[in-house]
Image (cartoon, rainbow, N blue to C red):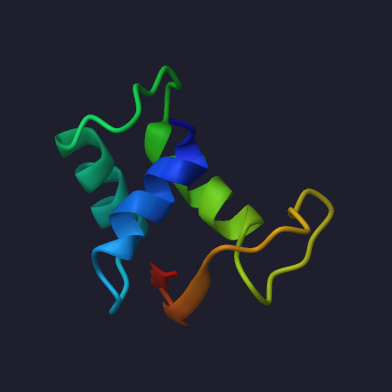
Length: 76
């Protein structure tokens, strides 16, 4: 399972959305992805933002899966 697939799995269970910290904690608790990065929360944050509707920047993905439901919460 990829990081993005892990994020999608976690967010599918919470329509109201989760913070990056909550997404990260649930991925770890459910053992959905084995992070090897020094700062895994920033990896989760960057993948959410790359695939977030309404965010466009040089490294953003053209494929969008997530949406911001408030300043610090994201949902599918």
